[in-house]
Length: 258
Image 1 (spheres, rainbow, N blue to C red):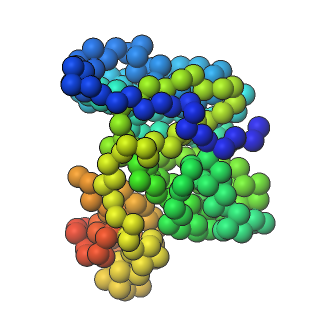
Image 2: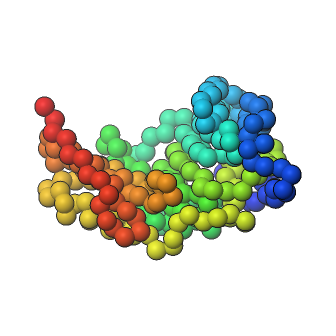
């Protein structure tokens, strides 16, 4: 079924008073509370498949029969907030031909993420099957969607949340994936003048003559926007980290296959 436009109604921002601290909340955060937060982002028929606990987070894996999607959600133990959201459609394969445009593929993101700024929409090929990789950001989230090049269906979502306020989520309606806009009251950690993925690729390619780009992803390291780019030229593999604000190369690893 078609995913509805994501709205803010399902998530209300809780303003913390002086008598209630984030650390106090985290100390009392139970698995049930974390699971309740995670379930606010997914269809109500989603079934819990797995729970993992580490020092920093609860990690949940769910499956929705109605949408035929698997969801992996990470909830911080210290803030009680979702920090990572991933989804994958069952049989998430692209196709050998593309019938929709890159502009059409962007709508898969803008229809779900309110105020999303599209950084790139690129037709990629994986195992001889095509798919659109659409990268985006807002003041509070960033990530990548993989979109079917014929149907426009979302095959995969990878979304990271950055410094959002403590939130209380309400149960999601059936058949809705709910990545709420949490820009109100947030503290942005990114500028609006990032270089584009294409510019980052050109910087990497200029330092790896003859190589071809295998991967280009936007990530954040201690609040700094970074493009992680992998290239290959025969037996030589390059891994670049490029500052997305100024284009400086932060790190470069070169490996030679035996």
